[in-house]
Length: 625
Image 1 (cartoon, rainbow, N blue to C red):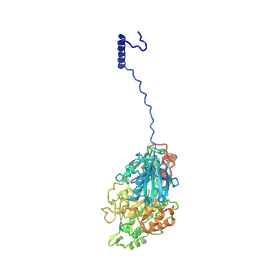
Image 2 (image 1 turned 180 degrees about the vertical axis):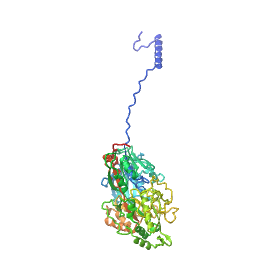
Image 3 (image 1 turned 120 degrees about the vertical axis):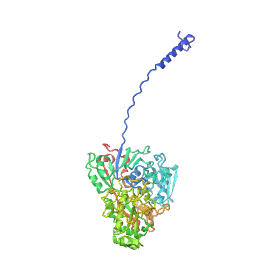
Image 4 (image 1 turned 45 degrees about the vertical axis):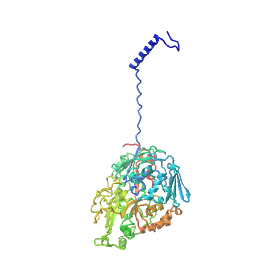
């Protein structure tokens, strides 16, 4: 019987139907139909990491671009590629608004003088925090209160930094019209991380940068291997960089030839010098495809000496004049950086347009033993039978300081010590970490190792210079750890006992910036600091005779420069002698033909250097590492 559509089976027929269904289900569970085999995975091609390797002379002690202690080619590269800046120089060195950071920046009031910044709402740190007003506030507060900073003049003129629009707009007020405001707020730092970090101004930047605000980030710093790895910052709100990685690798000069020829590096950024020139000349081909391209460019600093005019023997201007007349600046340059250009002015550098020396024809700019002796005699010193200058039976003894982690500073210091001793001045060399030397009134008197090493880029010591090393061959120590105190060789050890406690440095060796307008540059280096800067900090020189001239040089009425005020300031500085400018080192950009084809690398603007256009670089081909 066949049931009709919609009818229900009844009686025996229903039982049979249920039993048949049960058997069918049991059979299915016992012998299931096999499922189709999954399709094999489609193989994916893993893209190789694109990389460019740049050879460098040294990593440097740290990476805060606002600290004199941390100035280096690596710090300049990091500031250019990792840290955000409101304005950046174009190919001609003229400052242009960086719209990835700020959509506008303009003077919005003259009473009081106010500059308003509208920040890009997409701009953010790699941590996810926005680049905002708090970063402006943090940099302003640190630059006016911390010792050893670069370009503090404009920040001292700021009276307030106010936030609006949820931190994405900033109003900055000044105590007077300040025409150089576009130079400010370059290399912003992550306030949300640094403001509460222990040693926040220096420690977190000693071995890297904690977060990025640019197209690249610092992925790692290996001081043992001498490498700094920059990787493309993902995510990044603007146009991403082409290369995945940029490796900065320390290459000793003797290895430069092989590194270029074997394509271990794609370009090199050494200091110019006879040994480097010989090494490059030996590279007859690079990978069999041609000779390297060599471009010269000045470094953005002037190597200098600073005299402690606020205390000790050097507080007497006649002693400073005697010391200056005893030093042979040309001999120092020839011994340490023979390819460098002499620097004969305080406020301008040889790389500045229209540069003219302001140094006097003779002492103190040139060595003059008679003038030196007259100055010491005028200060009450007499020369003993042993040839040493002394007063009241005590010798004229000076402490010369150079950072242990800045090799060229060490090389200069050794020649200075030798020249002072030859002139009858007892001198002791101390070499604390740069972070201490440029920030603290007194330092632990660690002395350098006696392992001989030639100065980078130099041609060997000058006659009479000590034979101890100019730079360690081992990786530079971090700023937090002072090198162990060791005795110097007899040729560099003073006849007096080495100091055992903290000492103040009388002659400090360091580099001063060579970028920015002359007025703010002079005021930053030689003007009276903010009252919050610790008393006795290195590099602080405040002379009443020069401050009014510096105020004129930073006023709106004399922008971009007042030649008469600049000349007057130079005359006062050569008389008061807060220090001595020595030379401006020349750098090289050495690139292979393969690198030139995909980067068009140039020395770049002085402030941002050869990595200025690195976001558009491609990987050199062929690549065989």
